[in-house]
Length: 117
Length: 110
Image (cartoon, rainbow over all chains, first blue to last red):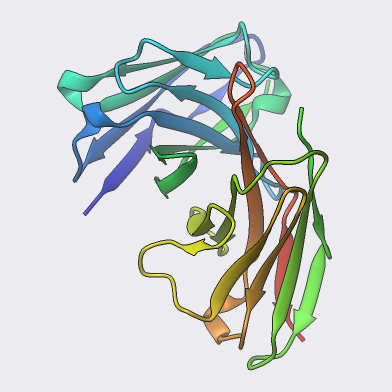
């Protein structure tokens, strides 16, 4: 069974930094691209970032470009999201998801990031 | 950037009724459209991909149709577990690739 487990979400002050992790199991992690998607409390979904299977290509939403960095360690079956210069509008539940062709399937349960002073 | 619009925002129906949800793209996405279901406190789940293909394990009462700019998700007969929020999502291959979600349609119990 495919499992994705996010961690690292905490309360952080505006301007602060945070690294999220996503531990993958149940599939050959190194064969798949991976996404991060976020969902502000009570709101809809926003795609954040995509990384290719080997980490050689990365893509970002305009809202996080230059502040967030996606990476992966295939030897550890892990995906990461380094978040710098955090803003109040970055407050959200952050999901990792496996890229299946053009789609996101499955998703983890998410980790909550709160940016507040 | 391709923008997705979903209608209605809320659909109030009774179990057993048919639900018809709409997703419209600001420009053609061919058949590169998916639908996800999200229940309260849960992660989204892929229902339909490539506009009309059901994902693994998705019941036959869920069907998708459309191409270009207009898409529909139909639930033929609502079960109690189907009351949830539904999102459409497209992928644009225009360099760089990007992914956008619609704002969602909430299907609630009438």
